[in-house]
Length: 293
Image 1: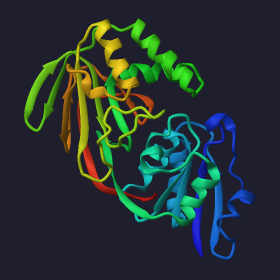
Image 2: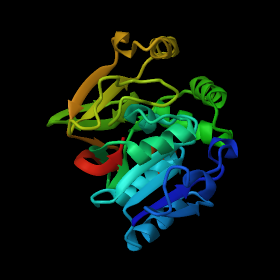
Image 3: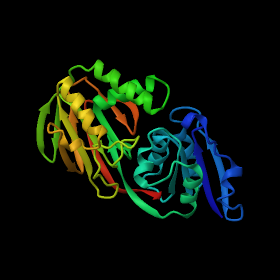
């Protein structure tokens, strides 16, 4: 008997397409699968539910929700032999898009039932995992404004971007160390990616791989508002590398540091977070997660 648990965020995707045992039994026969559904009720709850499932010695855990829910469940499973599945129910669905997992619930469940198993890398910010990307500067501010709107739609994401643009101000100086090369700058954006998707089918790192043991890094120095608009235009037409001010790197790690007492505002897999540290190590854990693709 295969034990499979579903960790469901009931409000993801505006609460549509709720997972139920009746739906699941069309894909996971009761003779072969022991099914359990758990619903998360608040931010961070999926972490506790997943830890409980790990303690119950399950074989497969499936995250049903957006990038935040996926991050919470997957973070617990790093380094374990438990298989991780995804039913994308969020707005951006960056990791699911990279893995080729359909947004349609029935098709996603079919992938879990019949898909292939593969190992993927996990990024890590001071021991906190990310699977798609993390960012500091403008994109972190966009996510902060996005969350304040309390609705996860493309319209709200664009609205949050405009708000960040209108209130754009000077950023704090950051020391950046990539492979022993130091640079002090006032960055507009520091974007660090494990996957090739931002969400909503946008990408700053289209060549990124979940299985190469490397992080794809984009650094944009302080730029004018006009240059910000140009950068946004190149992103919209899916040609971000045309923006000459952006610097691209591939590395297994990057150090960031600010003045003592100053903390980093960040987005981690599309969730805003203040990291209460002025020194960050962002690195990669190779083959860290067993994913059903």
